[in-house]
Length: 496
Ligand code: HEC
Ligand SMILES: [Cu+2]
Image (cartoon, rainbow, N blue to C red):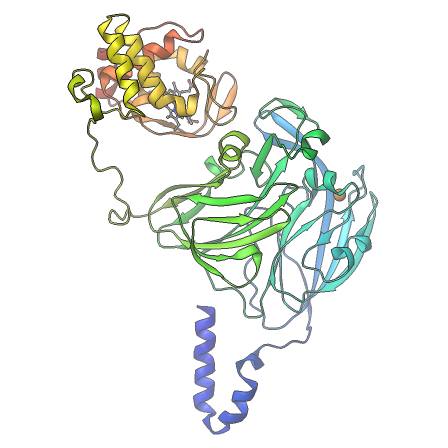
């Protein structure tokens, strides 16, 4: 839009002053941009996932940035705390937005409550250390230096005080966008997403205040890989939002300190990628983009259909086992041509076509051998319901709740000794039929995820729940098909 308008204005300008076209042509429309530093403003700094609004001024100015380094103890995951070293009290640090040619006067304040000196190396700076030596600041002091923004792009900044690795590992990084003179193309929504890792003494999910593990950091073996500083910072109520038809831009950073991110949004394709955070959209139609440690990328895409789109590091154990998951919730009209949703589901027996007496309803098997196993079990007549239940469990529930029923800390709740499960049979039946979302508390821990409705028939539901109740120290209840039918038929929503 902005660029189009500019072109229109320029065209009008040309036609009015057609007589002097030649001279105008040589100076071009760039004349409406000045390269002289005029005026002064205070930088607007935002907390992730938000970014300051685009810059509309047509000239460089002096921009005063005030940023405070602060050591704070905060949530890393549910029940897990960490003492973060931060720029602006948060991880990642505040996002700042300036324009090419600006003169940035940077004031780094180190809180009097800090135990460490800190400084800042901005990758946007042309000069030794990116500002690091000039900004070295003891607790309770401030340092000032200035720099000119010579190169537009999306830049990481980080603390570079020795030991550098430790300061970065504790959370000291953020992004600064240097807009090109003419700005970036307008989009409907912009978000700030920064990936990084945490190296804790304990394993993923171990509760309490966690200390930094130097050994794990050197081995590049983090317990946590997260977006925006903690597990769950972009899920549930904190999901990013958009409406169908809108264009979305992500400013993605990677603080590292060690890992390269394979950034992907499940169910979306990036229409444009500004590789490595430069200002040229150098690729179209990208599925997964790489974001180096200490680097960035800008991605843009239009959202066409509603639903929840999951942001992941596609080094996928980081996503499902270490926390690198975010959500973009898109609301609006369905477009069944672009995406139909499930249209039909049938029984498929593969090579076991003759054994079609086992299941009357839909269930997918990962392999024909599974099917053979129950055939054998059923023929021997032993514990029909339990063996069917086990098959259903291992072909559907296991993906999330795991074979031992323990789930995954903070992501998938346990079924083993679950107070939620054991307390209310009807509620468990409803969970399987209708799925479950929103906050639930299981054994004192909060979960805020999405369990999709399971496409199982009544017999399979009664079997799988009877099986789950019979395992891992659960209450041993039996769930009858009749009971499933009753819950299915009832209109009342069972209380959470
Ligand atoms: C795609 C992942 C996924 C699958 C597959 C799945 N669940 Fe869940 N389940 C979840 C999530 C996530 C929650 C928590 C939802 C929330 O936070 O609101 C949950 C919650 C539950 C709960 C209530 C909480 C608890 O731990 O007691 C029960 C019971 C349950 N699931 C049973 C099952 C059964 C039985 C199956 C298989 C038929 C199954 N789930 C399949 C993800 C899954
Ligand atoms: Cu530092």
